[in-house]
Length: 93
Image 1 (cartoon, helix red, strand yellow):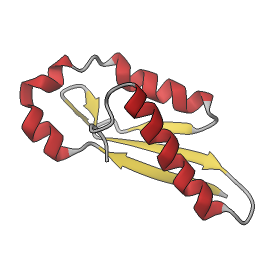
Image 2: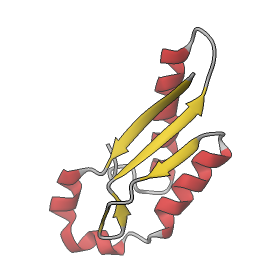
Image 3: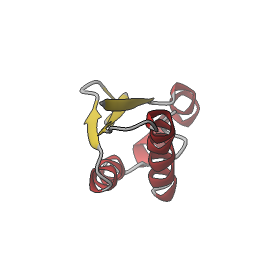
């Protein structure tokens, strides 16, 4: 079974940050994707961008067993941990 979780660009942050979004280096999103890929996830970025930042990131994992709902929460935890370490934790919700 493939389980997935989508993280959308936080629109409120984009409204309040405005030009400050330009100070976020584009490599941080790439590093987020790379770190999640190293953890065994398949990561898809939206082709629609806002100021160079994808409007959504979808994280997918093949999983079997009775703990699918627990693992779904783990995807969210891993995404949040990596994005927080990179300093872009408020960028996606």
